[in-house]
Image 1: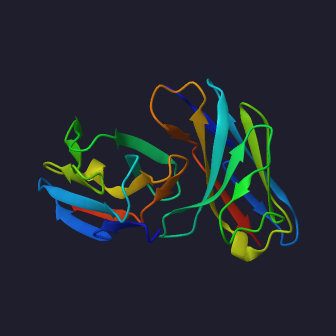
Image 2: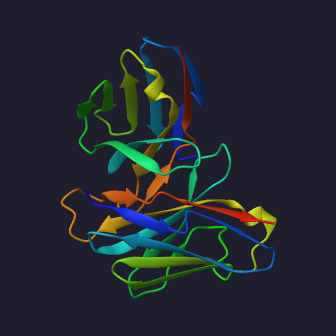
Length: 118
Length: 110
């Protein structure tokens, strides 16, 4: 089956620093990747849609200058949280849509990255 | 998302009992996904429904999508402790991306 990995699985950083999270599709090519954020006891909220070779599309209320997304290849998308603050502490999950998927809009989810900003 | 309502928000069920979780959309769905999650972990894909009236089963879990493609239900038969977790319905509303309901926290009492 299609596998999506995320790295790191958890990270702790100081306020004001930047953190990069990687999302990789291991055994398939993903033209589109999605980034979600999940706060404690809440559901997943879509942050942005990342398309290979083009600019990401951000959801309303998500600061594009704070959450930098790069989708440089068909197997890798990165999310950089710039100048992180404690309120950015959350569980970040990516998903990838296979360019060759036979299932309509099937998305495969990564295991998530827990970010804690001190 | 307000476009997708999931109920109940929390459910406590005695082991062995059946239960149902509902997911309702204000718009027609291109596709409806059910996932299970343990808090702080990734999502486990359960089922995807696309056609009106479609019904799928996996072990003791059955999911249905109504004819109008605006409501889905997830039914667990003879619940077990391993069924405990957060159940999320995800909807493809725009042929582009999946948005999620608020989730249902399921607790199974031994």
